Structures are given as structure tokens and as C-alpha cells.
Image 1 (tube, helix red, strand yellow):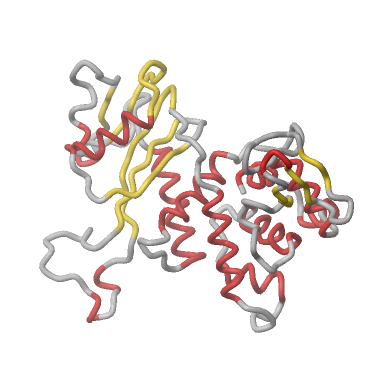
Image 2 (cartoon, helix red, strand yellow):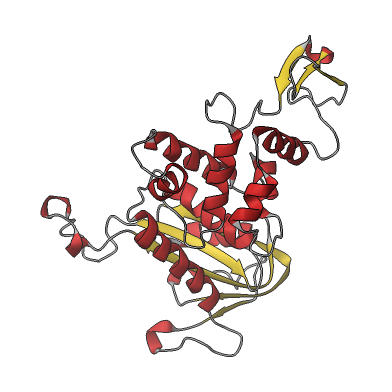
Length: 298
């Protein structure tokens, strides 16, 4: 990712931002977002506006049908918010981004910046599920504070375990490759099995490494069996040859450090968006122009 100075030189004004968005949306030429035809006509009186006669003289602009549509903030501000989100390995809160851009947090509406961050996280979601190949590690984790640290009126009593009232996230990662994760309601066998069989490419997976959770017990059985091996954490075993879950646990550590240090608290409602943000940054960590990748999804 380029430096902030290089980013500012790349996008010095609103015109440069609109040109970049146009190139990201339509790399092969402008197309009507309504019908998909490339038989469109540029409006000379309004730059970055086009007319599609196939749709009955439908007018559209470079921001039509994007997350930037119907917002009053210039693209220059949107781009700066997106850049600050992408360069922060452990995430950056909307309040910190707001202070970085405006200096004084009271000079403009903070809630607008929060809205922009939320919209950008939604754009980071995968357009399609990418099947994982090679050696794949699978693990589940729990997001949420400890019950003993909550206010007395918000504690969960009588549940019998310390995972009460936490959000459950399941993830799979291909070593030196991509990661996929999602929120789940429980860790029963059917839920875990369904996620894994959707996440991995059965024909091209060499190994599925998990811990000893009972929900993974059916992966290596049946007509659609996967090459499954288990690492027994309860017995003090963390690495056995090529079998371990250290890579996915490293991703969980990064996610939790981000939530704890940058955001402090994430509700169940918005947790999927934060998962999309961390997943997008990880999967594009080697992309030399991750910013344009994000623009193409907006």
C-alpha cells in the first residue's frame, strides 16, 4: 500500500477520484448499470454523466448504484476514509479516522464518518465464496467480553460456561492463502460440517486440520469424506508434523486485538461487517493496488 503522501498526489482533487472510480467500475468501457449495454453517450454539459437510450434515455453518473450515491460528502473524503481503513492492520475506529481527517472531532458530524466506514465494510464483503485448496485450517472462536468484566446488571448467570452470550465465529484459512469466516448461531455438527464443505474445494484440498471439537467428527467419513486430521489441544498438543491450527489462530488474534484495541466493542449486528473488513485486508495483503480492488466492489 502506498504512503499517505503518494496517495494524496494520486488523488489531489475530485476529478481524479471520479476518473479512478470510472476505471475501477468499467475497466472495459462505460456500461449502463441498468441494462449493461455499452451503447451509452457522454453528456458534454455534465462531466461523468452518461445517457442510455436503450433504457429510455436513462441518465446515470459514475456514482450511480454505488455506495457513494446520494451522499453529500465528496469522493475525496470517501477515498481518504477508505485509505485509512486499509492501511491499519488491526483496524481503525471511525472516531480516529474522523479526527485524522478533520483534526477537531467537533468540526463535522462524526456519525457521517461512522456511516461511511460501515458502507465501506459492506463493500468489502466477498462477491462470491472462494473455495480453499491445499492445507486448510479450521477453527471456531468466541467474540465478546468476559462475564466478570461486565456491569452487574449485564452479567449472564446460571449458564454453566464462560462462553455465554458471546458471538460465535467459524473460520477456515488456506496456508499462505485466503481466509473465509462467518458468524454462526451454534457449534453443532451440522453447522460446522456445512461451513467446511462449502469453504473447501473437495477435489483440491490436501488436508483439513482442526482441533478435537466433536462437531468436526464427520469430516473424514461418508461418501464425501475429506482428508481430516485432528490436533489435540486438551492433551497439550499444538503441532504434529503438518497438522496444526496456528495460522487460523493467528488470524483470530489479529481480529480480537483489533476489536479490543481499536473498536473496544462490536455488537452482534455489525460483527459480520467487521469480519468482512479483516478478511478483505488479509486476502489482499499482497495486492499492490488493494485500493482499486475496493473501488471495484463499491
